[in-house]
Image 1: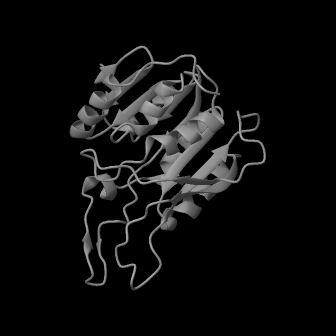
Image 2: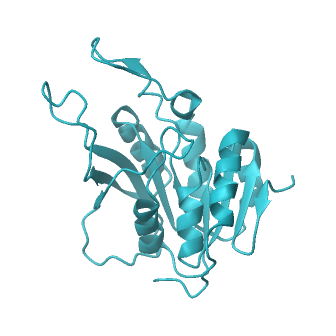
Length: 228
């Protein structure tokens, strides 16, 4: 398959990750950092407001099939952003593959005030962290709570902030390592990896999001000096 976008650090494919990932096994992937659809945001909210993120949120994700594939592909670490309803399933699936797991938390420093007069703000998102024995880890005795502001919308309805993704890439890889994002979206993981001097491969099923990611990547400065 021909890349949708390619430069010296990053390759982006337009397609289904379930079809592309098996070909990457044995390629020396150090880490997977990814943000699949949560299948939880599109909903009525008690008549207060309707939330609809389209396919970016509702595309079905087969956790029991993807977790073993991720565990086999990444020789070091896997980070998967997920809804609270999905978290325990991801963690158990990685544990069945012999990986050590933790729950990570993104503490949003500027959460939406929506419905704040009625209930606690929606100010956190969860991440399933899993690692193989001997995986790179550059954050001695650090807690997996990451404080970053919400990213501005960029044509994708649920973009993760690049600094947040950079923290994960930096924590679990070294300069020159290969990072894979099977659900690339608007490309935040790839941009973070490129800015840190890592190599990256992304896969995105929606062509319109591939175009957004490609445009953003083309504006990044390649830095193989990287930050550890």
